[in-house]
Amino acid sequence: MKKYILISVLILVALLVKASPVMAKNNVVTSSASLKQITIEDLTLDYRVATLSNFLEKYNSPISDYAESFIYWADYYGIDWRLVAAISGVESTFGKRIPPNSYNAYGWANGKYVFTSWDDSIRIVSKTLKEKYYDRGANTIPKIARIYAPPSTTWAWKVEFFMNKIDHLPLEFDF
Image (cartoon, rainbow, N blue to C red; front, side, top):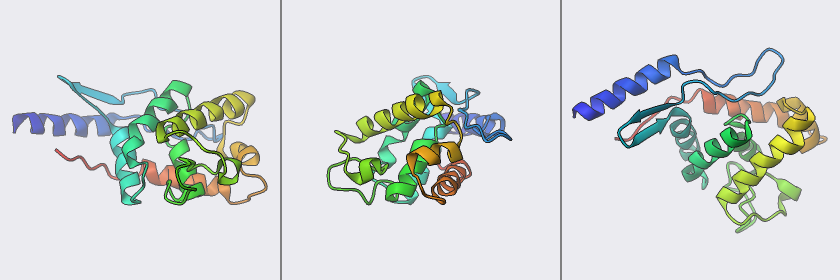
């Protein structure tokens, strides 16, 4: 029981001092590099994994078990941890409306691109967003939208809507 109380207190402290990934005034999409993890013996909690997992579960998403993969690849490539999941929300209702066995929750090639797994799709989309978008100056949602989903005038605000919704979901932990 003491362990659960300690974990709860540490989570509460982390939530109070966490640096939430935000868009700066110039709408540059950034990644949170501040306090993200609490380690207790062999237990490592990342508020972003819990947040994203809970969010995707609320949509009965087939990618809810891959929250850790979204976070890992976002951190690895230095992109916003909410971006790829938010894109999947716009393109496929978080992976629920995709061609069978395509793992293409992101609308790539109008849904015709086939990935080998959810992990593979998350890695490739994250890498591509970094190399073909961020590194070439498309580091805001509106700039990404012009390349990712032309000529849509709604794609950018929908992605931003889901990113904000992910970020403001209350955390729920199962102990």
